[in-house]
Image 1: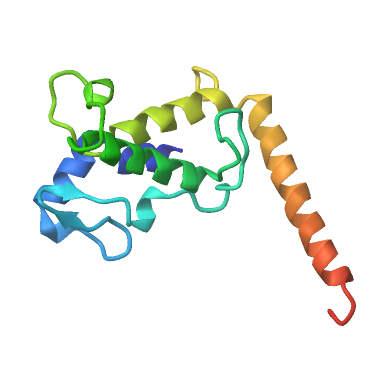
Image 2: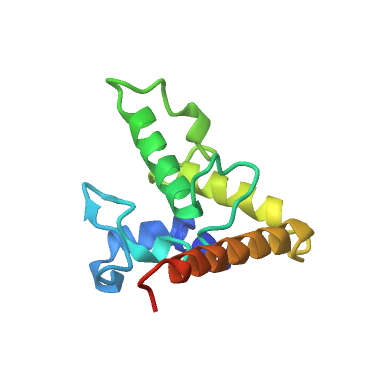
Length: 147
Protein backbone atom coordinates (compact mmCIF):
# COMPACT_ATOMS: atom_id res chain seq x y z
CA UNK A 1 0.00 0.00 0.00
CA UNK A 2 2.74 2.42 0.94
CA UNK A 3 4.57 2.07 -2.37
CA UNK A 4 1.35 2.70 -4.33
CA UNK A 5 0.50 5.69 -2.16
CA UNK A 6 3.96 7.10 -2.93
CA UNK A 7 3.73 6.28 -6.65
CA UNK A 8 0.43 8.14 -7.04
CA UNK A 9 1.30 10.97 -4.65
CA UNK A 10 0.60 14.27 -6.39
CA UNK A 11 4.19 15.52 -5.91
CA UNK A 12 5.65 12.31 -7.34
CA UNK A 13 3.40 12.35 -10.41
CA UNK A 14 4.36 15.98 -11.02
CA UNK A 15 8.10 15.20 -10.68
CA UNK A 16 7.87 12.28 -13.11
CA UNK A 17 5.96 14.36 -15.65
CA UNK A 18 8.34 17.30 -15.41
CA UNK A 19 11.65 15.40 -15.24
CA UNK A 20 12.32 12.93 -18.05
CA UNK A 21 15.53 11.72 -16.36
CA UNK A 22 13.72 10.07 -13.43
CA UNK A 23 11.28 8.07 -15.57
CA UNK A 24 11.90 4.34 -15.73
CA UNK A 25 10.73 2.26 -18.68
CA UNK A 26 7.88 -0.10 -17.76
CA UNK A 27 7.75 1.36 -14.24
CA UNK A 28 6.28 4.79 -14.94
CA UNK A 29 3.40 5.45 -17.29
CA UNK A 30 3.91 7.19 -20.59
CA UNK A 31 3.85 10.97 -20.45
CA UNK A 32 1.94 12.88 -23.10
CA UNK A 33 0.65 16.44 -23.09
CA UNK A 34 1.93 17.02 -19.55
CA UNK A 35 0.21 13.97 -18.05
CA UNK A 36 1.28 10.46 -17.14
CA UNK A 37 -0.98 7.54 -18.08
CA UNK A 38 -1.83 4.33 -16.20
CA UNK A 39 0.51 2.05 -18.20
CA UNK A 40 3.39 1.92 -15.69
CA UNK A 41 3.87 -1.28 -13.71
CA UNK A 42 5.00 0.71 -10.67
CA UNK A 43 1.43 1.79 -10.08
CA UNK A 44 0.00 -1.69 -9.73
CA UNK A 45 -0.36 -4.21 -6.91
CA UNK A 46 2.08 -7.12 -7.22
CA UNK A 47 1.35 -10.24 -5.21
CA UNK A 48 -1.88 -9.40 -3.45
CA UNK A 49 -3.84 -7.91 -6.34
CA UNK A 50 -6.34 -10.77 -5.97
CA UNK A 51 -7.57 -9.70 -2.53
CA UNK A 52 -11.30 -9.17 -2.39
CA UNK A 53 -12.87 -6.43 -0.36
CA UNK A 54 -16.35 -5.01 -0.06
CA UNK A 55 -15.84 -2.31 -2.71
CA UNK A 56 -14.13 -4.42 -5.38
CA UNK A 57 -17.28 -5.44 -7.29
CA UNK A 58 -15.62 -8.68 -8.45
CA UNK A 59 -12.59 -6.90 -9.92
CA UNK A 60 -9.05 -7.56 -8.77
CA UNK A 61 -7.32 -4.55 -7.24
CA UNK A 62 -5.36 -3.67 -10.39
CA UNK A 63 -8.51 -3.79 -12.50
CA UNK A 64 -10.19 -1.57 -9.93
CA UNK A 65 -7.40 1.03 -10.13
CA UNK A 66 -7.54 0.97 -13.93
CA UNK A 67 -11.32 1.39 -13.77
CA UNK A 68 -10.88 4.48 -11.55
CA UNK A 69 -8.29 5.92 -13.93
CA UNK A 70 -10.53 5.40 -16.98
CA UNK A 71 -13.61 6.68 -15.13
CA UNK A 72 -11.80 9.91 -14.33
CA UNK A 73 -10.55 10.22 -17.92
CA UNK A 74 -14.11 9.83 -19.14
CA UNK A 75 -15.44 12.43 -16.69
CA UNK A 76 -12.73 14.89 -17.74
CA UNK A 77 -13.79 14.62 -21.41
CA UNK A 78 -16.17 17.54 -21.98
CA UNK A 79 -17.94 15.64 -24.76
CA UNK A 80 -19.09 12.80 -22.50
CA UNK A 81 -18.26 13.63 -18.88
CA UNK A 82 -20.42 15.27 -16.26
CA UNK A 83 -17.56 17.33 -14.91
CA UNK A 84 -14.58 16.96 -12.66
CA UNK A 85 -15.65 18.77 -9.49
CA UNK A 86 -15.80 15.50 -7.57
CA UNK A 87 -12.15 14.78 -8.38
CA UNK A 88 -10.73 18.14 -7.30
CA UNK A 89 -8.33 18.20 -4.37
CA UNK A 90 -8.55 21.81 -3.30
CA UNK A 91 -7.65 24.33 -5.98
CA UNK A 92 -4.88 22.22 -7.58
CA UNK A 93 -4.84 21.24 -11.23
CA UNK A 94 -5.96 17.69 -11.95
CA UNK A 95 -3.16 15.21 -12.66
CA UNK A 96 -5.40 12.30 -13.70
CA UNK A 97 -4.92 10.16 -10.58
CA UNK A 98 -7.31 11.76 -8.11
CA UNK A 99 -9.83 8.89 -8.41
CA UNK A 100 -7.06 6.33 -7.88
CA UNK A 101 -5.85 8.15 -4.75
CA UNK A 102 -9.39 8.16 -3.39
CA UNK A 103 -9.79 4.41 -4.08
CA UNK A 104 -6.41 3.61 -2.49
CA UNK A 105 -7.50 5.50 0.62
CA UNK A 106 -10.72 3.45 0.69
CA UNK A 107 -8.75 0.19 0.34
CA UNK A 108 -6.32 1.23 3.07
CA UNK A 109 -9.17 2.14 5.42
CA UNK A 110 -10.82 -1.22 4.77
CA UNK A 111 -7.70 -3.31 5.52
CA UNK A 112 -5.86 -1.15 8.10
CA UNK A 113 -6.85 0.82 11.18
CA UNK A 114 -5.89 4.48 11.76
CA UNK A 115 -2.60 3.37 13.36
CA UNK A 116 -1.64 1.30 10.31
CA UNK A 117 -2.31 -2.03 12.02
CA UNK A 118 -3.83 -4.73 9.81
CA UNK A 119 -7.50 -5.45 10.46
CA UNK A 120 -8.94 -9.01 10.48
CA UNK A 121 -10.41 -8.26 7.04
CA UNK A 122 -6.88 -8.28 5.57
CA UNK A 123 -6.04 -11.70 6.97
CA UNK A 124 -9.42 -13.07 5.87
CA UNK A 125 -8.85 -11.74 2.34
CA UNK A 126 -5.33 -13.21 2.20
CA UNK A 127 -6.60 -16.60 3.40
CA UNK A 128 -9.45 -16.58 0.89
CA UNK A 129 -7.06 -15.71 -1.94
CA UNK A 130 -4.55 -18.42 -0.95
CA UNK A 131 -7.24 -21.10 -0.56
CA UNK A 132 -8.67 -20.17 -3.95
CA UNK A 133 -5.25 -20.39 -5.65
CA UNK A 134 -4.40 -23.71 -3.99
CA UNK A 135 -7.81 -25.11 -4.96
CA UNK A 136 -7.33 -23.97 -8.57
CA UNK A 137 -3.92 -25.66 -8.68
CA UNK A 138 -5.27 -28.85 -7.13
CA UNK A 139 -8.06 -28.95 -9.71
CA UNK A 140 -5.56 -28.43 -12.52
CA UNK A 141 -3.21 -31.15 -11.23
CA UNK A 142 -6.13 -33.52 -10.67
CA UNK A 143 -7.06 -33.49 -14.34
CA UNK A 144 -6.23 -36.57 -16.34
CA UNK A 145 -2.89 -36.33 -18.09
CA UNK A 146 -1.42 -33.65 -15.82
CA UNK A 147 1.70 -34.36 -13.84
